[in-house]
Length: 175
Image (cartoon, rainbow, N blue to C red):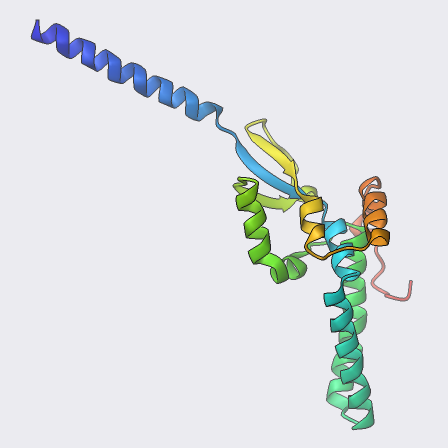
């Protein structure tokens, strides 16, 4: 009788663990994805970026007035480098880590709000096996930069286009 009762208890625990395992198999990871080009465009047309650009121009003008060759040379190097980087980010699939870093706390809040396990650029996904659910959060991320109506229209146009292969983006910012 005691053995029979122990066998029944064992069977109950065994079935419970099997059900638990089966349920774990069906749980999908929720991956937030975004079109990095749209985030880069929203940032590049944002008040924050315009203020940064203006402060660099002010610093550059002051350096010219003061004949500060070191700052002039540094900014002369920085401006075309940033222009090429922005071209890679907006027109191709260049990494936007430098932009995402500025809003990482807000990105974390969006992840929690959407119950996401991870967020990455949609251009970085080369394969999924169906065990993950991809959730597009592009619009939520671009909204962090308060885009105006013109920017929103450009973002919608960008979404409809394939990115330019990054190797086709010129390293000459004047091209």
